[in-house]
Length: 196
Image 1: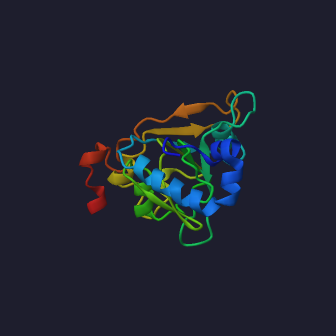
Image 2: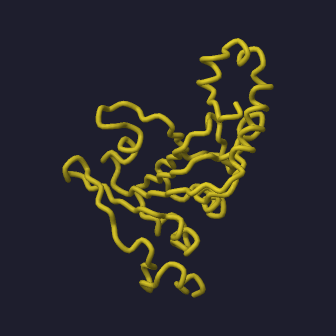
């Protein structure tokens, strides 16, 4: 567990122990998860925007052979005011699917950052270990929040793609100008629009 063994690994190698001592194993995994997540993580964030049904989510989850890619945790919209991360097991990629601004802005900034982040799960906590975040949405980032894309969010978004239906398998076309303010066209760290 100290090396980041997943529940699947533990079940395969120590099924009896996992079944008999699930609470203890859960606590031990949480302790190691905290220790293993203490260092800064460089998190790459991609935004994939497009109409419904054109393969945004599928393109992240499945490869060319239609086989499910390993190591991706899917975070879906929650009806509750807080997010539960049950099932997160140290996956290196986080998919925030069908995003429309349903994560509180200040918490989204933490999710997209590389600092240690404690995540609630039933019966305890675990810690973020992802180094890649993919956000799929039918809306552009400017539509997610009333204040639009502020400098703090803009600098965390590294790649911005539009999936276009009818273009060779819904090809991804990278959009330019992600690091510039759409209102004043200034570089992200120099934009003053948020103060207006």
